[in-house]
Image (cartoon, rainbow, N blue to C red; front, side):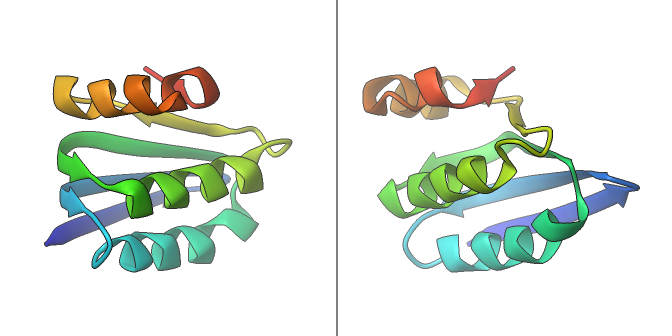
Length: 99
């Protein structure tokens, strides 16, 4: 299960994801992002309450990163140690802006 909250303030959007980002829930997050991306220049993903991310979730992040490049960018914040370890092992920590 994944709970998603979104806040849009002008050209900046923040999405908070809570729960598991996996094969079942990744399309839900992808849909929310796809809805927001055309109208924003900056996107922040808050993963403080994200418990798990699968390869399907990583694919959504990579696609979002590509869509936001040149617009202002994508930033991921409040990443837990287990999620950060996944980013490091997969090389995503070298690609994504993580704070």
